[in-house]
Amino acid sequence: ELKVEQNPLFLSMQEGKNYTIYCNYSTTSDRLYWYRQDPGKSLESLFVLLSNGAVKQEGRLMASLDTKARLSTLHITAAVHDLSATYFCAVATLWDRDDKIIFGKGTRLHILP
Amino acid sequence: ETGVTQTPRHLVMGMTNKKSLKCEQHLGHNAMYWYKQSAKKPLELMFVYNFKEQTENNSVPSRFSPECPNSSHLFLHLHTLQPEDSALYLCASSHTPSGDPRDTQYFGPGTRLTVL
Image (cartoon, rainbow over all chains, first blue to last red; front, side, top):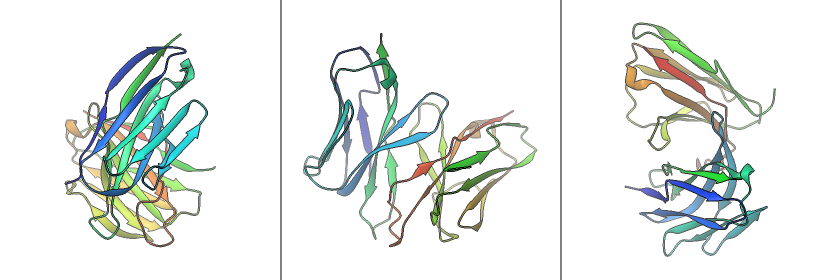
């Protein structure tokens, strides 16, 4: 059974600081997603990572994937208040084998001005 | 309207009521999904429809009944719900030309459901 664990689940940080959110998963996968959810709003797709060593960057956010370690990271550089949100990682099982996308519990990020 | 829309945005119902949630996607996608998001729990996939055919039902109680009349519309019919069914219900869609259900999903704003 595929399990997805994010940590930390809650993070309060000051503007200008760097931090990393971790996403571990328990079985082989070839696809990992990062989503953002603002309070009271829906999920917005940030990144899709498809291969070992994949790295994607958008503004102050950078996501990477290590399929051998079954680990993805979402790195925040010089955080700004607008990045306050809940960030979810989601992992897809391999196609043709009980196709599922399993979400982590989310990391609530609160950036203090 | 663009993207994925859901109505109503908020719904309060009694345990004996019958109501329906509606989702519409304007993206030309062929797959649609219902998710339940409860406080302090991971997002839970409830149903998957691919080309109007239900391809997954994750052991969802029968008091939730999905309907997908075409690739653009998805309904979730609710009856005799329990207070623990109170949650945010999210609809999503994706484009899966090869049938791979794991393509990036685009989410609607959700329906906040409260069961009294």
